[in-house]
Amino acid sequence: MRLLKQQKPYLNTMNIINHNWKKIIIILLIVYLSNTGLKYIINQDRPVDACSESPGFPSGHAAVSFALIPLFNMHPFSILLALVISTERVFSHEHTLIQVIAGALFGFVVSYIFNKITISK
Image (cartoon, rainbow, N blue to C red; front, side, top):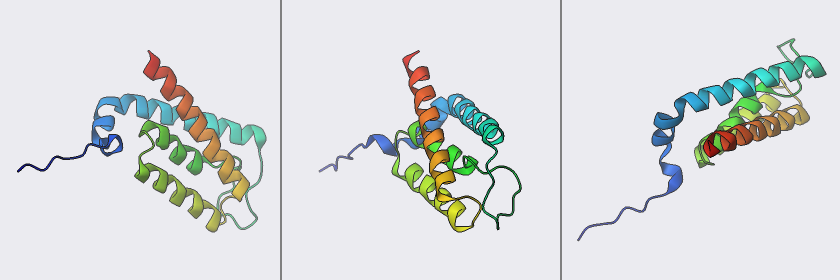
């Protein structure tokens, strides 16, 4: 008797990367560059004990890590990775919670929109 493997859409991560790696890199670059520009426009300081001296709002690590979520079809690992990275940024005192939340929302929304635009073409 054969056991049937149950296919789950989020387990096909390598297939997503193999077929969409150019799109993934372009969207991550768009998120990174626009987030960096936004940091210098807003120019909000980081927490007092942060090691970096660049502006802190919004968090670039949170933006890029949350940008991966729509690109990998809400894969649980991408969600977990984004949460771990973002939590570490707050606990290491590199960002405030608001800076991380703003970066996460920015990265997710920009990635989601560009992902939808490129799918429809």
